[in-house]
Length: 101
Image (tube, rainbow, N blue to C red):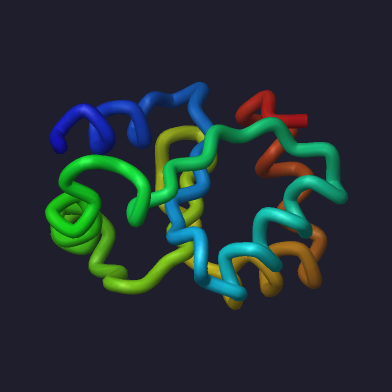
């Protein structure tokens, strides 16, 4: 369980933590993919201890929902946060800075 938290917080790591049945997760992955971002995906409903990992992520990020997107080792939030960053023109520079683009 702690392995996921350590990996998500690596400075050069981009990670999308979600669940396979979540439509917001699908939309967020599609938006990041459209931009050409490179990122790892962790499907909490498909990994052992996924529920415990989600609880630990909530402790770390104060976010109990998925998707939980990490860029450059920091959580940038979920779908609404990603959309706000994109609309403001801040998402692509953030992805470039962390070498996801």
